[in-house]
Image (cartoon, rainbow, N blue to C red; front, side, top):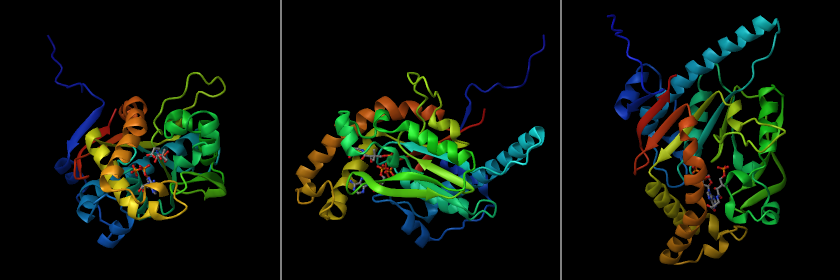
Length: 317
Ligand SMILES: Nc1ncnc2c1ncn2[C@@H]1O[C@H](COP(=O)(O)OP(=O)(O)O)[C@@H](O)[C@H]1O
Ligand SMILES: CC(C)(COP(=O)(O)O)[C@@H](O)C(=O)NCCC(=O)O
């Protein structure tokens, strides 16, 4: 009887703790300073240079290898087709809950990847620009479902990504303002043929909607790589409430803020309001729509209560 010594992995992922992940990028330089990290960190996120060194330095090295391999694949296709097709942007999706820290992750990655000589131009776009304007959400009865898949103009997002991948010199996207809690009329973000595009949003890993006859494409069909930022739901809830309390003294205090009426609340009342929004909108969306997409990501970063990444799971098959 022949017994094979090859072990067939039971899972398509490799799961590494922080220390094992850190050891994978010994010789990669750390291009950011403490000041850079302070500039890039989001409200309530205590990320520091140590975290960037331990987590994002290996990640940027991995992504640099993937970008180079993708380039080789692109060249192979061009050779086979006898076409001289131009390089298209490498697209990275960043998914996860409201308040989990997607913006910080995306901004750090953007900065780290731009320091590699082969990807100096890295652009970042958030999917909130593709939310329907409040007037349209009200018309559809979706004002309390902001962030749910149905609150986005998914077709417009797919059209945007199609143009990006087709190598268009300039592609524009609508802009959302957290302050006014709405799309900004007439304003556009213009993406000019970057080497890398990071697309950040709650629902970027949603599967295609089978009910749509015209197009069965998913947003993630345009991704070359995707990251899911994960944490315990109870921790994210706490981060959301803490951020709400801090915003009271800053953003909410501005007269144009949609949440201006909350600027003068007492701590107890503000906690009640924040928990109410979390429990009625963001938590149900997380459980029903966002968390189920986690297994579709190429890489999962799992954060602990203090926001530091404790585990990294990479899809290898
Ligand atoms: N009501 C608000 N007013 C002003 N800024 C906000 C408000 N809500 C969220 N933000 C900011 O918007 C950004 C995106 O937040 P969010 O979608 O929760 O993603 P994440 O926390 O995962 O980065 C963060 O930088 C956050 O500080
Ligand atoms: C604007 C958001 C839907 C996030 O959008 P994203 O960029 O992730 O697509 C979210 O931050 C939000 O405002 N949610 C609605 C509930 C709330 O006010 O927290």
